[in-house]
Amino acid sequence: MAGETPIPCVACNQQMKFADLFAAADELGADALATGHYVVSRDDGSGGRALYRAADSDRDQSYFLFATTRAQLVRLRFPLGTMPKPQVRDLARRFGLSNAEKADSQDICFVPSGHYSDMIERLIPGARIPGEIVHVDGRRLGLHSGIVHYTIGQRRGLRVAATEPLYVVALDADRARVIVGPRAALAKTRVSLRGVNWIGEGEIADLPASGVPIAARLRSTRPPAPAVLLRTGEVEFVEPENGVSPGQACVFYDSVDPRARVLGGGFIAAS
Image (cartoon, rainbow, N blue to C red; front, side, top):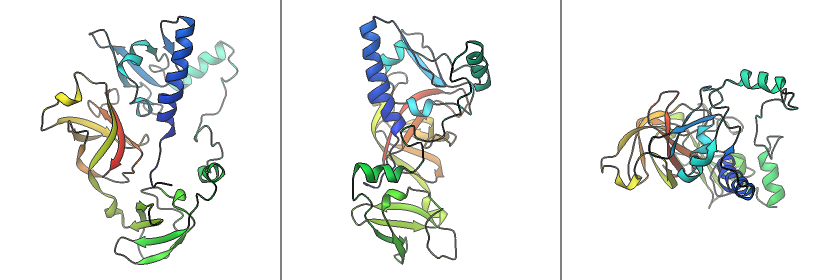
């Protein structure tokens, strides 16, 4: 409703899995907590643990774990991170686990139908506020039934007549407007972040004023791209990135390598 695209999997890890499960681990007197995330952690040589992308790049979930704290990483273990998914299924069959043949999850777990706007309407009646679809040049192209149906970068389902492909380039929640334009209008070279979590070496405040080279990932389905991280929490991309959506995560890696280390990340506030 605010014109952002939230990422509930990160919030779930922060506020539920790694909060409630650690509380249960403490009650049990457990030394460690193991989860089924496809990610790798290793001793960093200084008493802590560093986080890395999974061996199976198609299953890598490091994007969703950027908010994990250093203290949590010390006690977390990810036994599946070094295995491909077929091997995990073979082990599940060998040990007689009931979910050995369970289909892979494709949608948000609490919205199995994929129609998240219906869920929003049930939770907040009246969330679908109609408004205008407006071109970046100011032309009014049509009407929509609520900005909750749209996200930055969306092309399908606009239902407006145009002589060129159009994409959602911005959402104006205050005026209930969906702003569309050509693909070129999606290009961004800089993003500002909030809620930054740093799990690299040292502290982010100690980075040089000119920033440090990183690889930044804006979507879980998108590969990391070369960028520069500033100590202000802003990220500058070497090449423009498309579909930068407020509310999504921008995750930092030390390189574009498939086994790269996770340095942290934050939530996109503006671009």
